[in-house]
Length: 296
Image 1 (cartoon, rainbow, N blue to C red):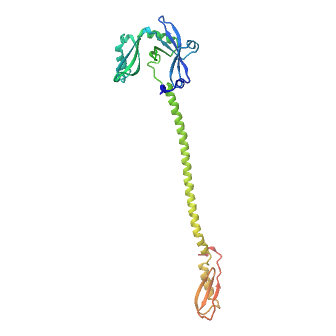
Image 2 (tube, rainbow, N blue to C red; image 1 turned 180 degrees about the horizontal axis):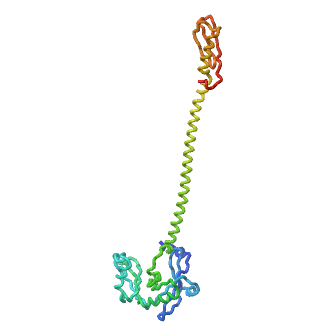
Image 3 (spheres, helix red, strand yellow; image 1 turned 90 degrees about the vertical axis):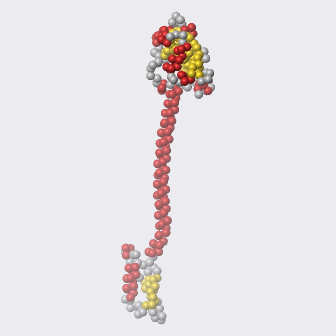
């Protein structure tokens, strides 16, 4: 993905991570440039010798002379390339002019070869030469590499101070960027979850208030239907007062001897119709009780 990016983007934020030195046949070191790494982790090499002398980088990179290196390019079976470093080195060692115990071998996968084969760049140097260069590198920095330069690609690493050390994955710039992005996503997810839980609480409170409003509306409608009936019922005299009033009316001397009919006149009177048509009807008012508990 990085190879498809424009070069200015790919090289943005470059910083020096290593000074480069050529190793002469006499064992002298000559500065030839620097190794730079961008924010995206892309490595580039500069031939600015003055910059190499001025700036102090955290590590050094020693380049062996071409006369000390045997180079070749071979095609290997893709199955062997997937079996791991040990299997691939054993296969590439067959193309080395030096015995395995005297050779320092470095390789890099180039791309697909003929058929189902993989093309591999191979560099072989005398182990003594590489160890002497490593000794010179240790005198300058605790972090170093001994490499064989390639004109069209990154150098092949013959020796590295971190060889055999535990690889710290988070030190890779690409992995660091992924970890930062993952942390940002986790923070955003936590904030989003908090707002979602708050929205859920608000929705639950809204449902409770809507239920209470429906109950109040129902009570109001029931009250609107019952209150007229209650008011109408309260407009009539109570049954106890009615009976007391009838008892008083019967003892009244003006009552006729024969009563044809009694009519209740709302709210608190009785009309007496005598059996004798010659006599007129009598309207008897009834007294209302003052105690509300006596009402029915």
